[in-house]
Image (cartoon, rainbow, N blue to C red):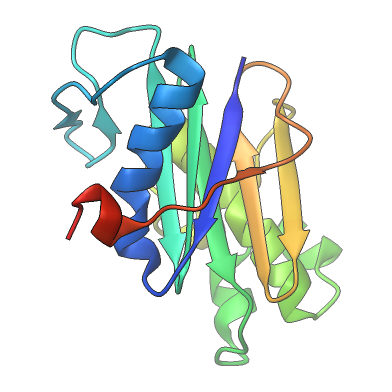
Length: 173
């Protein structure tokens, strides 16, 4: 079963791997993470553990981690205005037809697209040629100033499990 964990702090990038370690402890009972490797496209994975998949994302002070027995993708983005031409350059024709013009909707569509690409270990560029996920188990999440999505093979979790991660206390500096 897929689980999505999140943490908020000063630097989401510094939170991502400590969040993964705590999520793996809670979900899989691991005391420590095994060595990780990267696919040719850069997707991290645990070699030799075909039933333990994860995905990481961070934006600003947020980090998300998805754990699953099959390939999984997760993405989080802070909602912030960008150049007005970005949606036309980043969204496919079908996505543009559904786009309501708000930055919240843009980031909802973007996180669905990126989480699917992460699950598939597929290229995200050029983004206009990548559609939001075809019918597959995925879920969007929203909060004040952020949007996120998970794309998995089983039923996506309804909620994100929020954890407090103290990078200094845990020795992750």
